[in-house]
Amino acid sequence: MTAQVHPTAVVDPGARLGANVHVGAYTVIGPDVEIGDDTVVGPHCTITGPTRIGRANRFHGHAAIGGDPQDKKFAGERTELVIGDDNVVREFVTISRGTGHDKSVTRIGNGNWLLAYVHVAHDCLIGDGCVFSNNATLAGHVEVGNQVILSGFVGVHQFCRIGDHAFVGMGAFVNGDVPPFLMVAQESYGRPRGINTEGLKRRGFDAARVSAIKRAYRALYLSGAKLDEAIVQLGELAQESDDVRAMLDFISSGERHLLR
Image 1: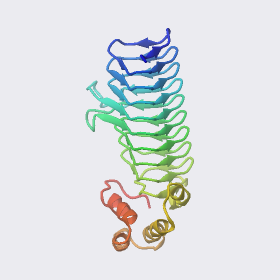
Image 2 (image 1 turned 180 degrees about the vertical axis):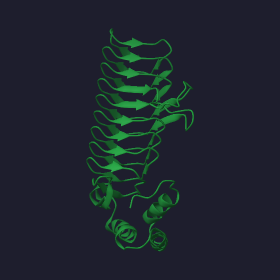
Image 3 (image 1 turned 120 degrees about the horizontal axis):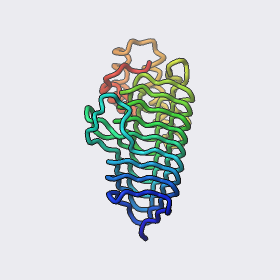
Image 4 (image 1 turned 90 degrees about the vertical axis):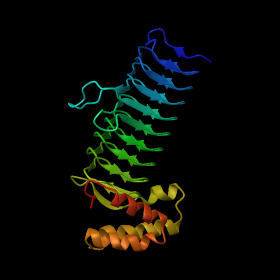
């Protein structure tokens, strides 16, 4: 089935729409935009290129996708936004393209939910299966892993990383790297408050895996050890747990300070 475009929508001749794409009333789609099969773009949306969007995505009303980065160093160079498959993008979400002085791309994976008023800034990299609740905001150059939940009004500082399966509570301001599996709660800037136990259980982590992650958390955050001493303890625990090894690898690859 060919694309179905509402008569009031404006689609540039340079845009490419896949099969069974629906474009709602008063939506504007610019040149150099590709939209994959079975994607629905609601009313009053704006999609600006260069932007590549996969299949079976759903954009609700007033989403602004692929706009210029909000960065004073941006000088009109060619950058892009790449979005995967099966994402849900709710009302008034804004997603910017990348900048030429970094990756030149903002990238969002598959199966994510971006709820109303979420902002994803330039050069962010987002994995799969994440949920960003209302008004969650990523500054530029943020990296978010897979199955991450950001609660409402979370703010993430530029260049921070959030590891797989982490949970950030409502209103927390994150200004450092969050290792995989952690739960972060609001206290001025977010501070670790235990591991994301409930989320891990929902995703099939058995008791042995959860216990190993808890031991790693105690070594890193509750033992009173200095960071280098805690890393040694994690190295010992990692010999028997791939999950602890993932935490250790995440910590060792960081460029910002560890949230601790």
